[in-house]
Every structure is written in structure tokens, then in C-alpha cells.
Length: 464
Ligand code: BES
Ligand code: MN
Ligand code: MN
Image (cartoon, rainbow, N blue to C red):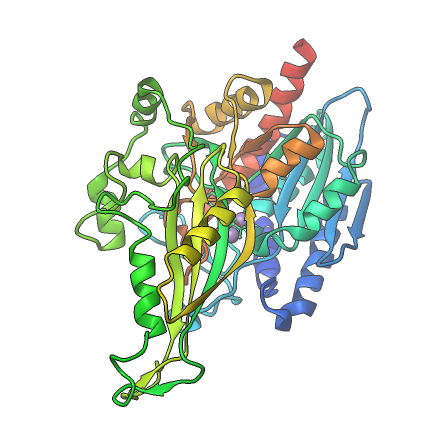
């Protein structure tokens, strides 16, 4: 039997080229202009799963973009791993800030990726990480090393809230039956500090609209005499945090799970350099909720951030005007036990309450989702840990992430199984940003580690 290291060595150029081809298709789910490209990407994923050895591959239609489903069932008595990933990507904007075009992948070396990284939208989030699983399957089927059953479910709407996936999962519980769910759509601490993601934050995303006078006004003739929606909106937003950077929405923290001193001490053991963190972002200080460390602020604590704000005149030169309307998009990252619908309602009530006379406020909820924490004391985590131990030569550190994959909590509810988050990206890989990239080392290391997860998971299950 050929070993995985050898297999990768023999096929790595092709593995990289195939990913490059996939990255050329601009599968931006948020923008209807890319509809055909999103659909073409689903076809490409389908073909890749067929080639990798799935016995059955389907493009499953949904009310939105299709889900690519594939499976290889070798023995109904063996465990089944369900792989989830997404083939859609974030919009590439602002395009001007890319050093090379977002859908023309190039490989360049960086400080953190001395072996080179693939630069393209979706390289890390999530085409590159999803494709590691396709190539790991190829290896396992081509060399007779697939120890259990495998199912793939790759969706095309993750970046816009996974609505169709929720629809699909609710209707296909039997088809999707599995023992454990495996996802590579998160990150790790560093290439020499492997980690496994053990938590995701929830999300509530809202848009607010503040309306003042019924039309834009001359800022001289009316200025000072009517409520200016932009002034009002910024003041309202500023009031959402107090001087300790606590969120002021009544009830916001009611269900927040407080970690014990021991748990916080355990978290603090993860390697972290504040200096390197600041340097990587060119900031002279960090900022956040009083009483918590940077790693706590971005993982176990909830947040509220303005993601976009607009209104009035933003063109060239000056225009003296009081806008009729002002807008903002606001995200709240939530922690386990906070219910995203409840938080959205609390926000709406509070925001409407604090609006001064002279304006009206409308709060429009967007998508959201629940947070998730994975246990570390069960077969799935142990198998993942053993796999990393083999390929990195180090025990991976369990680490809760600040990002969100809302569908994970739904998987647990509908499919009754736990999710293992084997992420191989780095925070510095610039996902959702210009110059997104994914290290060649990380890509190949992922392909190397995944089959070992299957091996150990099947072994641990057999011993049970
Ligand atoms: N893959 C990310 C989430 C992620 C990245 C989690 C890194 C942990 C570490 C995913 O594609 C994503 O961007 N999720 C969105 C939420 C979604 C509802 C749009 C997010 O976190 O903003
Ligand atoms: Mn993702
Ligand atoms: Mn994303």
C-alpha cells in the first residue's frame, strides 16, 4: 500500500493545478451577476468527487444554489464520516486592493508561507480547504486505504447564510445519516503550532435605517433645526458600548456562559504574542472589553460591530446637505447559549427605544445562527488529535474560534452528530479580504492529515 506522503509527493503538482482551476471560477454567492459561475462551480465539484472515487454524486436542487452530494459506502456496518464544505466565495471587492486579480490564482512566497501560497478569492475559504477532502478521498480510494464510509455535502450559499442547506438538511436526515461530521473551514494557530477548532461563535446580523426629514435638506437653511439622521445614527451606535466596552443592550449578556478560572487559565496556555499580533495589523494597541485578554475577546466573548455605515454625500468635493436617511450594517458575534433570534429582538427593541424624537428607526434582521462548542473527550476529537500528532509531530491545541459556521449547530440538532473542525488556514491568510491566500504547505498537510483521521476514527469506533 502506497503511503500518503509518497502519494502527495507524486501528485502534488496536479493537486495544486486542479485547485487553481477551481479558483478561476468566480462563485460569488452574494451577487446574482455570478449565478452561472456558481452553478459551473457546483458542476466542477461534482466532477471532482466522481473522479476521486465516489459511487454516487448528485447535484441536489434547492430553492437557492444546489448542494453537491457524493458518497462512497463500503460497508453499512462501518462508521460514516460526513464531510461538509462550501464552494461559494465572498465578493472580491475592493478589487483595487488586490496585488493580482482575485480569480487568476498565482503562487507567491510570504513570510509565513516560505513554500508559497496560492493567492485567489476562495483559496482558503473554502475551496482550498474543501478540496483537501476531495484529494484525501482520491488517495484513500486509489490506494485501498478508505477504512469507512464517506459522504460529502458541499454547499453554495455558506457566505450568504446557508438558507438552502438548512432546507436540505431538514428534508434529508436519512440520506445524511452519519457518525461524525468533518469540516475544514476554520484555521489553526501557526504552521508549527497545530490546533483544532473547538468552538464557533453565533451571529446576529442586522441592518438599520434612520429617517429624518422627508428629503435631503440644505445644511445651512435647515442645519441645527432638525435631527440629522447621520448625527443621530452615529450617536446611537456609539451608545451601544459603555466606557468598559461592554455592550449596553439590556439583557444582552443574560445567557452568556462564563468560563471558569480553570478554563480561562487553560485557554491562556495557547501560544500568543501580543506584539506579533499588533505588528501584523499595524496597530499600536489592542482594544476591547475590559477584563478579558485578546484571545478571550475574539472567541468566548460576544461582540457588536458596525460592518458598514453610509448616508449623505460621499462623492468628490463638498456638498452641503443633511441627508434624509442614514444606514448601518451591524454584526453581533454570539457565544453558546445566546439565542440569535432572541438577541436580534433585544437589539431591535433597544435600538427603537433609544431613537430620539425627530427620526424614525427601522431595524431589518438579516441572517444569523447559533454558536457551537465541541467536546474534546470523544472519539471524533481524539481521532483528529492523533492524526495531527502523526503529521505535525505535536499534539494539537484545542482552540475556540471567533468566526461562525451557523450550520454546525443545526447539524447537531437535525442529524444528531458532532462536528470536528479541522481547519488548516492561518488568520493572516486574509479570508474575506483582498489578497486571500492559502499556503501550499497547509493544503498538502491537510491532504496528509485527513486520511489519518479516517483511520483513527474507524479504529476507535471498532474498539468501542
Ligand atoms: N469559514 C468562515 C468561518 C470561519 C473562518 C470560522 C475562520 C472560523 C475561522 C465562513 O465562511 C464565514 O465566513 N462565516 C461567516 C458567517 C456566515 C453566516 C456569513 C462569518 O463568520 O462571518
Ligand atoms: Mn468558510
Ligand atoms: Mn467565509
